[in-house]
Image (cartoon, rainbow, N blue to C red; front, side):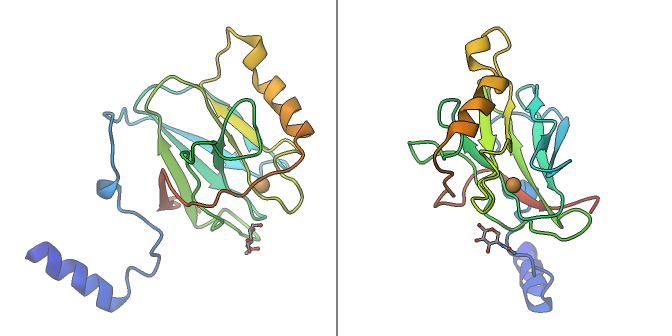
Amino acid sequence: MFAKAISFALLVTGVLAAPTCTAPEEATKTVPLTGVTHSVIAGFNGLNFEPNNVVAEIGDVVQWEFLPANHSVAQSSFGNPCQPLADGSGFFPGFEFAVTEGESKNVFQIVVESHRPIWYYCPQTTGNHCQRGMVGVINQDFNNPAFSLARHMELAAEADTSIIPETIQGGEVLVNPNP
Ligand SMILES: *[C@@H]1O[C@H](CO)[C@@H](O)[C@H](O)[C@H]1NC(C)=O
Ligand SMILES: [Cu+2]
């Protein structure tokens, strides 16, 4: 009752003006959180994710923050760098981080749920961000040079097209704590 009354009050006062923000407690967390957050800056020094190579434990959060331009982030696979996962899964928060100065008012977070490599790209097709190097990885297999980030970037550079995922899904969009 009480909670309902509160959310109704928030609704009528317009506090929920940013409908894309999911409250943390609403997220489905399948692994216990470690409390560690890895920040990745999209658009740092041009068409880059910085760092583009994150090593994370299960339960760590990876958080993307967005510098000026109109970047996003979408999960891909090692062999197909500039397109979403073939089975329709994978995260993509949409294009809602465009900003002309400072950092975007929102950030995007995922929780790392395994040690398997997670490949991702910026799906901004205007300007071919993916092909030009805007790709990254979480937990690449350092013992397997055939699946390195360097090789992935080569494949990205050769990609004929970059694809904007159709579905917004996965992860969480949150208000940037340090805009
Ligand atoms: C950002 O890019 C997307 C995809 O190209 C586009 O649909 C959207 O209109 C752009 N937003 C702004 C504010 O430029
Ligand atoms: Cu981009």
